[in-house]
Image (cartoon, rainbow, N blue to C red; front, top):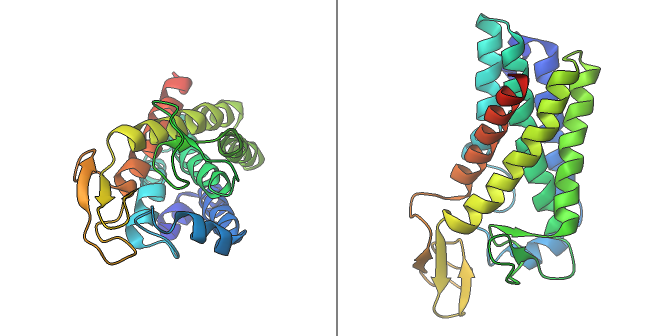
Amino acid sequence: MGVVCTAAGWSWAILLVTMFVSANLLSRYHRAARAARIEDVVEKSGARDAWQVIANGGVFTAAAMGSLFHPSPLWLAVGAGAIAASTADTWATEIGTLVAHPPRLITTGTPVAAGTSGAVTWVGSSAGLAGAILIAIITVFVGWGATAAWAAVVGGVAGSLVDSIAGATLQRQQWCERCGKATERLVHSCGTTTRPQGGLGWVDNDVVNALSSLTGAVIGLMWLW
């Protein structure tokens, strides 16, 4: 991804680095406390694997490749929306899971465990907006202009919202009979194989993150139009 984005121009590389470095720094903030709260719930924790990187940066990299072969303001709006959505979602997750009070499911308002897909808090949502605004500021700094900046803000917020809704409705949910807890894990932390409880079996967090990024890209394109 870095090679493709750098070939497309340093502005693309700077935005990519901004997203991944900020995500890495936030993941280190109170890491132990966050892990203790969400390790029973989330399917993946710790270092990001290749699928997570592709889910969060793949659409942006595709836009960079489009810009490399056929430069156009279209790719700037698409790229800004895509990377802002991934940044907003990551910031919302990393900060929101540290909030002391339990989050609420976006679709029903029901209090759920921290780390539950589709769960939101005002603090986490505010952090997501801040992430999108950061990307907007960087787009102005690298010379992409006001249209791309607004595409980042609108696309970032929309992508983060879609991530929460898809996480609450489409993402695979499991249930541990031994612990009596909902989880995303196929094998719970206690070692018990979990059973399906809801969502679609093939939709995991990586699919939801990719959908979020794609939504940001589409909204960014619509903003350009």
